[in-house]
Length: 260
Image 1 (cartoon, rainbow, N blue to C red):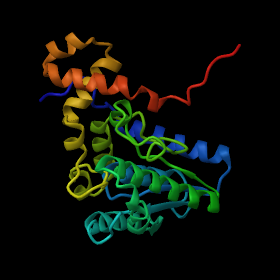
Image 2 (image 1 turned 180 degrees about the vertical axis):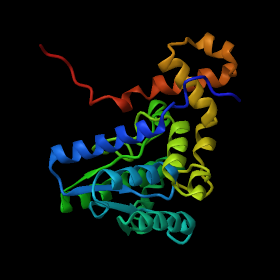
Image 3 (image 1 turned 90 degrees about the horizontal axis):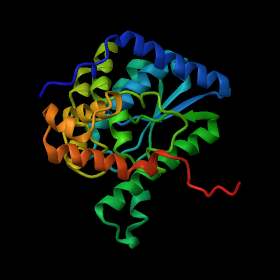
Image 4 (image 1 turned 90 degrees about the vertical axis):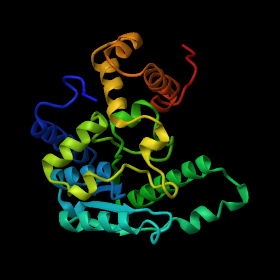
């Protein structure tokens, strides 16, 4: 399908500069020793890692690979390690298999176990961040943030979101622009929460459809019927807008009553 005009950014070098300056300024203002991020071998974390290394010294950037089972996920581990070495950044690996199995007695279903895994990753980022005086860089993009495709207090638990205003389409384009390896850019997006899991399969909508709907709704101010008439299936449009509405609580601060 064709993408809406304006969804693809006109100047990716400008976007690169804005994000690099944002990271550099915020890290400098807070006054920490560096940053840490989860390095999955996917395009989002690879892009954030590369931009962070450009913003501050690569030796101040720590990427942690957090597979549940390093042997099963060896290709992503290899891709993540190769990227880290090419950038000259620090990197480490911490397998979550034993930590996840400690919860076996709860008999969690697949989704709950996936969310548990995401939260264990967050705990690991912050353990290292606290010990080494670092900020945690999130790797969420706008497409996923706007429909709640992240775990509250998991991958949603970060100090900053450098690519949080980039749709997935923009993430791919900017990654190509700055030279992220093609094998990473072309890889099917996956959170790696269970074998065979893919983001599009779990969301139930392609990123082209998702980005188009969100862009037309958020940036162009189009109503549901207008988006359907633009050329996207009614069921898909309604599904995405419903996901956005139902996940609003994930994007807001903790609710509290007003007493004054």
